[in-house]
Length: 271
Image (cartoon, rainbow, N blue to C red; front, side):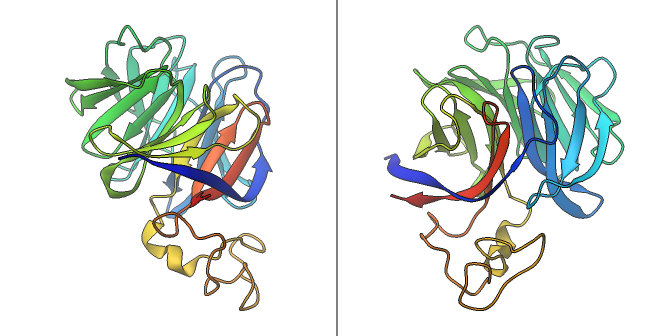
C-alpha cells in the first residue's frame, strides 16, 4: 500500500551554480576526493560544465567539461561501488549511458541501451551498483551493468524528470507533471508519494544523500553555516529533534527546480 499525504520540508535553498537556458538538469551526491557534495549540470547550449558544490551553501569546489562528444546530459547518479557518476542524455546520444570519474572528468564506460518507445528523450538515471535504471516520461527501465534489459515499468500519468538511488536499495524520482516526489522499492513498486517543492512543473532532478545516511543522527535539521552547529535546543544542533518529524527517520534530499533555478534541501514528513 502506497503511503500518501507526505510533503517536502525545506531546510535551506541556494541558486543554481549557473543559469539554464533549456530543459535538463542533473544532480547527485558524490565524493570529490573524500569530500561529499553535489554534482550539478544544467543545459545551456552544448558541452555544459559539471560543477561540484557544497550541499549547504552551493559554494563551488571544482568543475570540468562533460566527456568529449557527450553534450546533452540530462541525468546523473553516483555509483558508490565504483566511485563513478553515471549519466544519460536527452536529445543526442539518447541510447547511450556513460560513466565518468568525478575527480578527473575522464570517461570510464559507455553502454548502448536502446530507448523504449514510451521513453523518448531520457531525463533521469540511477545506479545502485548492481543495475542501472533509466527514466523519462512515464517509464523506468532496468538494465544490467553489461547492458542487458532486465525489465520496464510504466507509471501512467507520470512525467519522470529526475531519479536517484535511495535507502534500502530503492529509488526516488520527481514527477514534474504532478509536482510530486515518489519513493519506489527495488522492484519499482510505489512506496510513498509526497508533494514537491518550488515552482509548479519545474522539478527537474533529485539527489538522495545516501553517502551520509548512517550519520544523520549527528546532523542538525539546519546548519548555521557549512559544517557549523548552533546552541543546544535550537534546530541548528544535532541533539534537537527535527520538527516536523522526518518520515521513517532523518534523511536529506536535494531537489533542483528549473523554473526557480534553485536547489532545495530538505526531507519528507507526514502532513
